[in-house]
Image (cartoon, protein in one colour):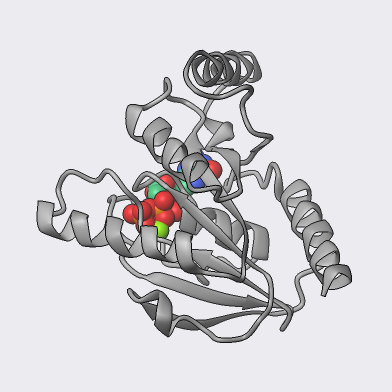
Length: 203
Ligand code: GTP
Ligand code: MG
């Protein structure tokens, strides 16, 4: 899919105030600093569309970006950032949960996982929450430029084993990405394109 336009639309903390248009929507979620905003910039080819930072906790609102006048990409605040006060963290979690559970236009959620790390409890718990609530999601392993292919494959295998050892029959399908060398860009955009077409034929 070619990106012809990518425009910021709104930021808020309330799902009822999100754009009303009935067009397909895809959200990026994951721990603070995992690379959600960078991935949005990478796949749209716009370096400053979503705000990024070396410090965790940069994105604090639900941000809608309209792509090709046809669908939304949504940048969400990260979870699990200890420096944010506990009450604020709670608020994050509640409005993120509301958004994920109530947003009817949301076709698929991408859960971003840092490909360098061992499986983290908070990510596994978050995916449990999605599974329990039937929120469809795919996994996106980020920052693949930071490790060798052999290490990447090893970490993905460990991830898959960890998930199947807990409550999952198998690990959900996944993408491997790098915002630095654009790994995974075409795969993600083609996947979204296919889902958009499916939605169009169903409506
Ligand atoms: P919050 O908004 O705080 O939740 O973070 P985020 O998940 O949006 O992360 P963000 O995109 O702001 O990136 C965090 C840091 O990771 C920045 O310093 C990015 O430059 C860096 N980063 C993101 N993606 C990649 C990647 O694919 N490779 C490398 N090497 N660095 C990355
Ligand atoms: Mg961000």
